[in-house]
Amino acid sequence: MYGLAYVPMVIPAIKKRARPFSAGALLAFSATYPLEEKARYGLVLASFFLLALGWPYEKQSVRFWERFLNATLGGTGLAIALGLYNLGRWEAILGVAVPFLLVRNRVLSSFGLLPVSALYLIGAYRVPENIKLALFVGVYLYSLNHLRKLLR
Image (tube, helix red, strand yellow):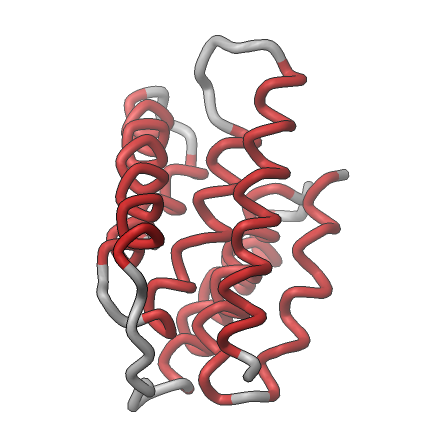
């Protein structure tokens, strides 16, 4: 049900520099919303196609504190994705987007934010559901800061 929160994040794909962000939203939606297998893989392919449509990417620098936060989110997100991979769950594909968080370009790093929030939401780690939801909301709201700067 929380996967529907990613649907409005696809709309900014109208602007070229926001296409990687929207591609991340499609990827996160495909993992968090209950879909048939063919539809899910179609959305994953559409996500990577939308990411490729943004080429060449504009350069927008990321501040140091944002890079630090992105690296922290990416490290924990990658650990969650590896845990999902070890469990044999297909949602581990979200880990492909995590290294984009380490790039110094805001346009490219925005691709990894929403998949990381999805990993926090659906991850197979042992914390109460309220904490998972709080982590999801925190990263989701942080991604809105990136989106605001992309749409300037």
